Structure formats: structure tokens, C-alpha cells
Image (cartoon, rainbow, N blue to C red; front, side):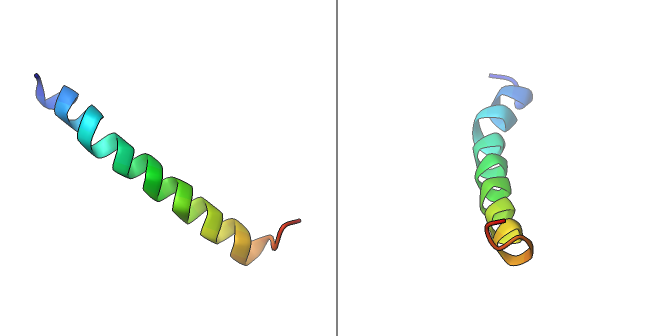
Length: 34
């Protein structure tokens, strides 16, 4: 496995989960469901 493969399979899920959670928090704080 290359370094890129390791980053893709290890870092990407954390980045995706973090962006998902942060996106929900920001939307809840600034949008309040529409």
C-alpha cells in the first residue's frame, strides 16, 4: 500500500465524519431547520 492508499482509507473517513458533524452543527445553529 502506498501512502496515498493509507491516507485514503484512514484519513478520509475521519474527514467525512467530521465534515458531516460540523455541517449539522452549523446548520442547526444558523438555520434552525429552515
